[in-house]
Image 1: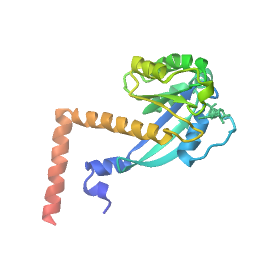
Image 2 (image 1 turned 180 degrees about the vertical axis):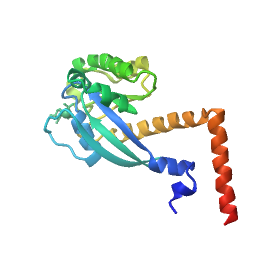
Image 3 (image 1 turned 45 degrees about the vertical axis):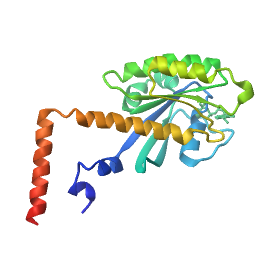
Image 4 (image 1 turned 90 degrees about the horizontal axis):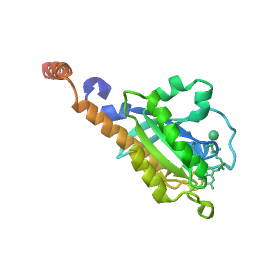
Length: 215
Ligand SMILES: Nc1nc2c(ncn2[C@@H]2O[C@H](COP(=O)(O)OP(=O)(O)O)[C@@H](O)[C@H]2O)c(=O)[nH]1
Ligand SMILES: [Mg+2]
């Protein structure tokens, strides 16, 4: 019998079944597509076909528990122009706000993007990761680590990291940190069960135990 039918409330089963949608948002050419390929296939190409939206399936273990991620490579500004934001953005559990450390312009765009997402996710509290990509390009850096960290703090982003989609530096770490934050949020939700849900939960547990004992 599948474990999830035997014990649907087991934290292990819950995590086995978990799958999250993470949306990549950022200015053109900051490295979103490269990041998504590095994350899903551990490869880097100098040039990718430009497409508005692509989905990458990433399976990884975080704290030794498997998780499935659907990484959506999009661009919020474009998405808003053609009106797909209404369905795509609200479906995201977490958002990677990406700028390039070599581009002041892409850094300035972040605040606007953050507010657009917040507006479309009204009522919920998604995980935000502010990511400064292209950290391997040391000689062309325009945004310092401290400037990035300060913006992350100002916006209340749970995660701030600098990455290189080229070398792979910190790429997997971004995703596993996001999963940890999503799990923390999930745990908070389960702690906030209302009395009716608690009653139903204890009835199911009692029923389950009595059927096991009878056998
Ligand atoms: N050196 C370096 N180049 C990068 C990095 N990430 C992306 N690029 C390059 O930046 C350009 C734009 O990348 P792309 O992934 O298409 O950006 P997107 O428009 O945000 O999807 C391409 O020429 C990539 O090869 C990185 O971390 N380091
Ligand atoms: Mg792209």
